[in-house]
Length: 470
Image (cartoon, rainbow, N blue to C red; front, side, top):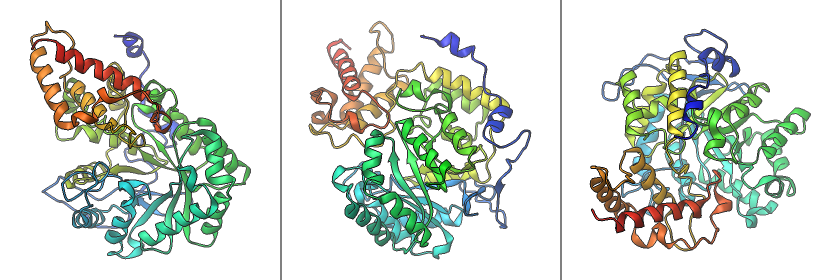
């Protein structure tokens, strides 16, 4: 295994240093800044929620925000699938039930976008949330003007106005410039500066139509640093910033994707400026909820009653400057598991940080595709279901069902399960064999995956399985 010895010899991150770097001080059993409003403790025997939600204070406005944030990218449909993956209509009743349950158990931050659920997320959340008092929740949405045809001042303002209409509100609590850095400075300037939209949003904040203004970041670090330089000079003021942070990306983001920046740098730059941090991708696109069986067994041995995902959520929620950790929760069991993790938060310990450092080292030896299932690569002009192809391959790899040696006694079973599962999860006309290497997907991937190369690698593996006798 390449470099595994050197990685194992790296000094683990000490919890004291971890919390100190993140501004939390040392030795505290409950992190400073974790404030909780007065409420009676709740106990729900059906889902393991034993206490009250952990809250954090927004340093800019004083908002008391739930550490668990409700991500609205994967709302359920009537076919019991995620609306991110389906053209079927969103199941509004299921959304309403989940929103009601989340609010009842202390979640008050809901994150959506005009781009989520193929444009339907804001509308569904507007219906669900408007049934509750407006001061009982914070709504976050984004100016998702990715396409050049939406860069004009008129089109961008109309997108913003439409968000207000869809969400059935006259103000946005948390407004984000969406995905800055994905296509470099030129795209940032075209989307927000040349058309005066950043200034427009600042004026909307001054008028009270936006309470907090921030941005979410992927990609070119020059754009991230530029926006913080605007903050330093007083030309702009960011109330919060959304970044990708998890126990892999903290120090190893570039090993997953050379275009990414380690979360340690991003977090510390925000922390030293006192800017509240919103966390996205705490599960690295679901990869940290479904890790290799052997690694999962080690986690279960340490915390038998906790899910694999809870390790990542506890890690992401431990730094003091983190305002909320977003989770896209399609099903009620996802919501209940995350409520268990944050009601209240049990911060990571010294020993657990060292353990997660070792887990990360071993995970990096597995050749999974670093896809976060964002679907920005879709639709493929030739009809491939790129995220589904990667998801099947990664799942089989993590579960030990990718075999390369036909002499292995488990080869025949692994071969059969991989091929049958591939045909079931990805229709034949949408499989990797139909990629013509046009490259249309490359510029859209925030993780910088060489998608055609990965599809070719998977297709070669599939052909190898087909040609090898079972």
